[in-house]
Figure 1 (cartoon, rainbow, N blue to C red):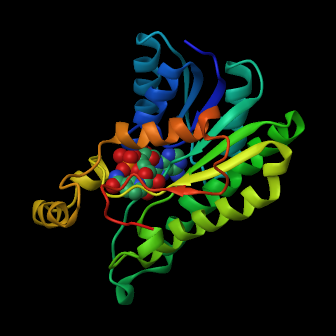
Figure 2 (cartoon, rainbow, N blue to C red):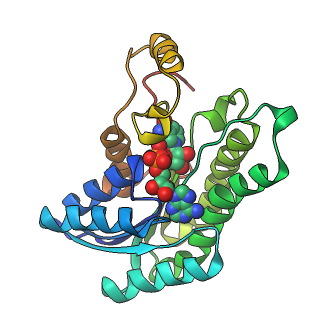
Length: 247
Ligand SMILES: NC(=O)c1ccc[n+]([C@@H]2O[C@H](COP(=O)([O-])OP(=O)(O)OC[C@H]3O[C@@H](n4cnc5c(N)ncnc54)[C@H](O)[C@@H]3O)[C@@H](O)[C@H]2O)c1
């Protein structure tokens, strides 16, 4: 097992984040498992430990500066030093026709996805720049590329993440920090399994691959972007999306 250093995965108590945390743990990272739900974060950290990896759980809301400071501090104290890899994955789903979209839902969507990515990145970037190395992977969505019906707030937040990824990559790559994103298509997680059977069947038929992705398949893309094999990938948005969006 190669020891890559320490990684933070936000929203890692479920779905894609959980799969990323498990994969990074198996790859030899010491993983700081964050989730809004401390119970879910603990369960995933225990899974990593049972598989022989190193992990620590911490509850926290990535939209709150004080929680972000605690998440960053926990990563440094638990895993002996600076963070090598940050995966900004925490996210929420909410759907509303634009006429019915409330300001509070719009604000929360941007708080979790955009403010959360901003705050977490602000926390870890200085030490990455000081060391001259580090990797950041942001979890966007194909709906940030093509838009989704009744998802102005979600699509807008995910498009913002793609823009932030490109802008930061331009700014810091020459100083040793690689920043990229993934924009998954429909993936079998609690978030998508909560949608209607009818929608899922219709969506499946639209996909060139004919099936939704599994969280582990997104985790494999993140693990690639984190690895030295992705040394030329800068400001990119990779699409593990069953062929739904082809750019
Ligand atoms: N499932 C899909 O089809 C799909 C497709 C494209 C993108 N995504 C994105 O992937 C990411 C993970 O989604 P998922 O499908 O695994 O969802 P999920 O609901 O299974 O998991 C999301 C996790 O994030 C946590 N979380 C929510 N708000 C948080 C906050 N403020 N701070 C910390 N943790 C928080 C939740 O508690 C939950 O455990 C999200 O950013 C989502 O937008 C999902």
